[in-house]
Image: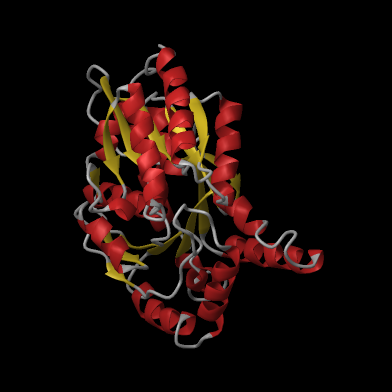
Length: 366
């Protein structure tokens, strides 16, 4: 009998969706039946461009950001609280998911959707639910209320999240820095963040591959980025849904990873996916840092690992940002260190590790 997997990927960031389509295609190639859900119409459109016909579970749960990808904590807290306590929201989603879970072997929660955190605690459902999340995102979630609520309440929240994760069938925690699959607890595995396969790298292309997720919408930031790249003399492939319609930008590009793998330079926020691409394919990366807790943790980890990178910070001044970018890009481009080894082989090994683990979870007694 073919393994049946339901994959719910939140659409707050496109990294979750990219991982969903990568794993869905790889699982289907290995004989599984995979159905994908997401949490916004835009997320469904994104997945559609990768050949995944995703359904929208509901549009009520999301993390809130401003136009420069700074997390809006108060707005996020209000939105999540309403989702949790309005019976027309989370309870309705659980009602729908309970019917769907009856017909599958595994239900994957990528990442931290509240309905599945709750269902993952409850008898009858918990043995089918697998949580997928980045290591830095988990730390950020557990620390979410530290310094914002009385310490005992912040600890209680972290303890509740920890309990929900331990109760589920398994947790697949990923990080761009992980070198191999390691079982760290009976219910938790550490895996390297999966990366799309790019073709065997030809000669390096002298251009920058830019990706900004949809939370970036400030036109001044885009202008500063364009000016900085022009000053360096780099052509660029610029992708960002928040800049759809802006001259020289694409809303989406399913071949972006292919371009990034052979580029002279990657420019992106420090999400787990972008850092993994830079690491696997040996490309230098400019990291656009904003107030997003898990990404700040990723920057610290990149520095510890010695990943070739420079950090950029938008302060509202176009000329200053362009100068920052020009200087950082020139320093990275002056470093002639090439890509290390076969990036495609490393990407394939990461993807195979994920598919093997998921199919093993289907086969193992619950």
